[in-house]
Length: 205
Image 1 (cartoon, rainbow, N blue to C red):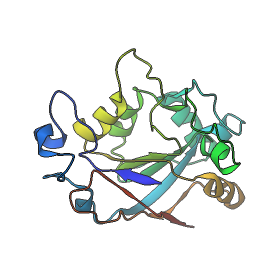
Image 2: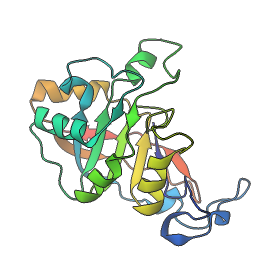
Image 3: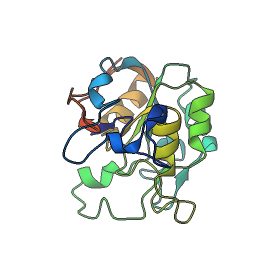
């Protein structure tokens, strides 16, 4: 379970805010926008349980989560995504790992579509996390366009993103409580100059 810092991805030689990608070095640190700058990650959390909305335990490996899927999950959870929300997208992928399946991270893997950043941008979402290893669908939807969702979320939008989150207990709790919104505290470990960090998120109903 971790957050990606805004320095975690680059494209066209740039990271977030137009900084050169060379300001992140393998044996040094991120000179700008390291994970330690994300000090206060506390907001309303919203679970968009895409798998549950479709009536399955886990989405198929080749399923790209689309804006339409997010709308369906919001309707299923009777919740409206608002500005400043931290959105958690459940695909059910981590279920395999928790069940002891050694092929849990075999590819293809479900994940977010290249079309979802626009959906999050339109709602002014603060951060997004899901329960997959690569965050976005893998292999990618567009041939040879590697980590395109990372580039849009982190580099272009400056939106924190998280991967490998365990959303199984949260999914059960939301179903029992009959609500898919809660207070979410997800403070990153303050590794100075880090391009990512473990996180131990807590949802409070």
